Image (cartoon, rainbow, N blue to C red; front, top):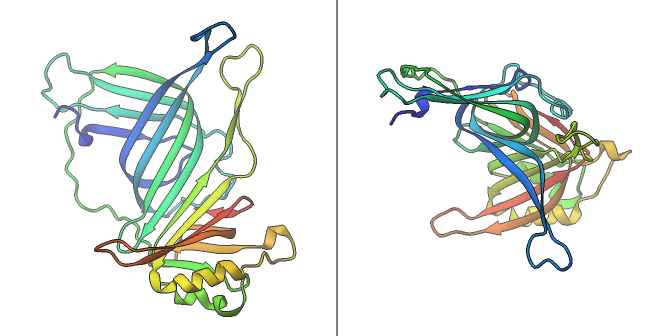
Length: 294
């Protein structure tokens, strides 16, 4: 194998401060064309060409929480710096084989998610969009560097669910009865490309409306009835719309915050039974005016 993962290199933009052991990186350059139809034309009357897009997907395991604190507005605007993905080659590679690189700039965050699963390290996923990408070939070679096994990965040890002020009756104590198996926090930035006459590329990718935060919590099935009661009893309480809702957070073994979302509301709940697995109940929450921390 000429260009295995140990020879590759990923350099993140300076504006992305998440420390992860990256396991997958993909840069996709797309051609953006739009077919145009018209009366009396049986096929396509014209092809409208627009500026192409660059999609970037990153998948990895969280290494450290130090210096990763961000609020919900951190990634609204364009990220500073460039992202570079390089495929190195080992020494002694056959002549004519060259390393490749993709350098993306004008980067915005479209989606960020964190998955916390019992007895597993924390997974992080980034979906980015960029204005431009430059592809290049080189003759760079790099010898594989063996790992020392000294990378410290973050494990989620506690899911904090604050339902106490948002429900009544039996469901008011629901948080203390849940055996949580996993929790996924997913933040999406709905962006709108802003074009002006004379420019083929968007001059801005502004956030179109509030960001959407979705949280999915999976628990053992004995809590299904309590979850159903909670959905039924839920009341949108608080003095103003900015002080209402449920808070859900994930913490490591030292109670350091991995991710948090507040001002959430329940969407639905389900009970699932699969052959060979524990029966589980799942509850989904969403929010548009959320406070998030990551």
